[in-house]
Figure (cartoon, one colour):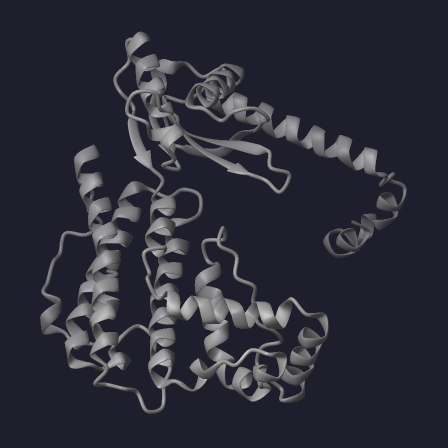
Length: 378
């Protein structure tokens, strides 16, 4: 804190020296800040003309279920407020009834009326979306009792996109990548030797990245780093550690790896576009629709058996252009991802009015192939 004070307000550094920084003092001040922010949110909530709630239940490292709730409301001046409402630990079961009770308590504590409740967003778990006894069904039942119209129920678009990423079926690539990374990073001596080797050859990167299934962007980042260090990994000779990796010399496997890097990078880019505060359904709709259009553009270019027309441009020596297995797998993968994007577009159409960001339209078939993906985003 003293270092931060010397940068932010150096003239008051002396005052910070007199502040007690014991663990209890810091905890009390964090609690005070939290209470103040909650009181500010309560004041803003009194002005909401309509609001919606997003819920996400996950398990922390102590195996305790944590239920996070976010509230988004709009007042008479169309000022949108989007804040974390509360995080509730759930030590028992995480049934729909238990989650619903936590939601009711949170809404009552902040003083929001059910008559202004217009939308609910969930992570798509069965306890959330069950048709009869799920959280959404319980909320709709509550609104019916209050004499209020049904709320718009939405499956979180980022959760959908993360689930879509799991449809990539290149297990032959991920298994080798994860084994290589675990071999290096799980052994202290081998890890130090590899980092020293990268430093010695003045590599752009200092290390490989661990793969974490729960982190949405992990797969793309791990694959990209592994692909860019493929030459260094081959020179490092993992065979000395008891693991032969002939795939690093197999042009067909490298082509699978390069394709998976390309696609996961595009999925990561889409994921980042869907994140952040102030996102509107129209913007999410446009981003997914543009991504779906780009998928079809790439699919149309695959019959020409030229990987350089795909999103990535990393050159590979001796590309096996006659490998029909690869081109077939690539088409199947693109179509699988596009089925998700189309299902989201259909769900937006079925939940309410359509949204448009621009009124123009044109055929992408009349523009140069390299410009088509860029124009699809407009």
